[in-house]
Length: 343
Image 1 (cartoon, one colour):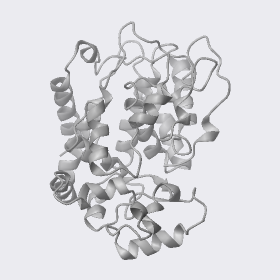
Image 2 (tube, rainbow, N blue to C red; image 1 turned 135 degrees about the vertical axis):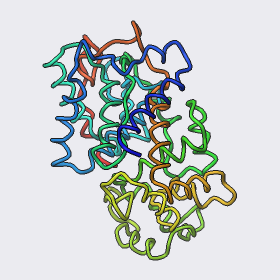
Image 3 (spheres, rainbow, N blue to C red; image 1 turned 45 degrees about the vertical axis):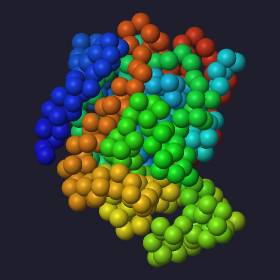
């Protein structure tokens, strides 16, 4: 499918998926009059970041994912702690793993220079996620925009909602269902975002030596792959060592994530369980995407739009933050960017 057809399909799917008055206020031309160069400004910062950090695309799409799974796509993940806010950056699914906040700050600064007080941080995350996929060889699509930023964060909800890498398939499915996504096509399609990026040893080491308390490796791991991972991540070693989520094309957005699962080379437990859980309805979807990249791209676009519409703030709700790390008129206690450094 050509990029123009992806755009058309994405727009059509987006309008079909609008299920509430709030979502209907999002528009593909939201900034046409007030900040017509918003997307190109964000892309300029992102292209520059890609030159020095090949991980940044995966990091930014992960920020968008982790934002939307906690009280909706409202940029709450970007808020630093204050006297009244406990930052979501310290949640279990974010601490020492979420990154890219400095690049988002650069995007916001550039937009504030061009069109002050117009583009929300929530929309920046949405646009940056799409552009990260497209710049890495994946599909492009037309974003529906007009989100506003929250004035609160919720670390409790972040700890509850964000999927951990050691979940069973049923537990993972429930995480998606809880936020309004489905536990089959949305789950498998969005998991395909692990076709690029990195992960730390600490997030999969239990699979290498003591899977489910057995004192044995995870039997679903390819033995050659297991040996390579054990050499990289020895017991008692440095848990922050990074390795590729996709062993074949680590910086390219393609369907090799799914062929890796078919070869028992999924890095995280939650990756491999999509294919190796006996009788799971996700197995057929993995097989489809592994053999048909176009099918993966098409469904990934639909699922990204669905996720991007979760509990958005529009109209007079929330605010347009002038600085993504703090609510307008409130100074943050400190930057949390030093706390996060993986994926």
